[in-house]
Amino acid sequence: MNDIQALLSLLDLEPIEENLFRGQSRSVGSGRVFGGQVLAQALQSAMRTVPEDRVVHSLHAYFILPGDVAHPIIFEVDRIRDGGSFTTRRVKAIQKGRAIFNMSASFQKEQVGFDHQLSMPNVKPPEGLMSWDELVAQYGGQLPEGIRRFLEVSHPIEFRPVERVHPMLSGKQQPLRHVWMRSKGEMPPARRAHQAVLAYASDYNLLTTALLPHGDLAAQTQVQLASLDHAMWFHRPFRADEWLLYAIDSPSASNARGFTRGSIFNQQGQLVASVVQEGLIRPVGA
Image (cartoon, rainbow, N blue to C red):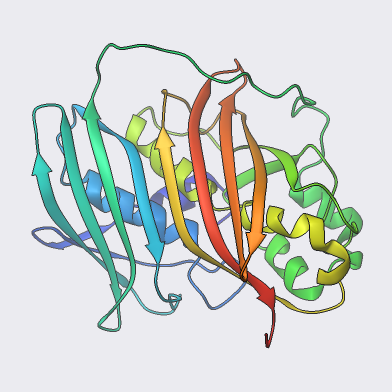
């Protein structure tokens, strides 16, 4: 996917029956479906069943089984509740007759209330920073094959990391990093499209942050990484085709799981979304 139009096309699900939608997959360097893709498609399927005057404010998802990029995914939407202010949907993603993913999402009408937020971190702006593509061109020969293959695949999102650290090449580092991101190309004005694209992008860079304190050990063995769950809250309007700062940290890793969280800011310093994810993180064969 060279630009954002390819991703938007991927998220344009085929309606096959009331509350049922079919989605296709695109590889990001492996035979497994990228978690951000199924997350964004599930959110898109829920959006299709919700009135236009409501926008998603939170979602909570579990990755149950790895998806196969060679087979379509069926999304089944359960209309849990339609209330005066809030609407609740539950989505099950099915492949080969089995659930591979489920998600609950809540939608809300725009309302007036209190307003505060944490301050945006003071980091270098995206202008002048190297993108993933530029970093791979310069340092690709030093990367493990699996990581290099993932980074060499064309992505619809441009990432510009503030810190030049790699979890398997940089020794022991603090579990903290900042990444600027935006879509490759201009997007339509619809707010829901920007939310779905941000859900897709939010699955990048998270779990590998939990490897940063263990880079010396990770470099000595193959590491198994897999998303287990993913939660996201949308706080304020934003555009996914404008620079957003993803501030990520990993407070804990234990029992073969890494816990990560992220705050997403626009360039005006507004906190637009928050993310939490836990994933499997262990040496292969352990």
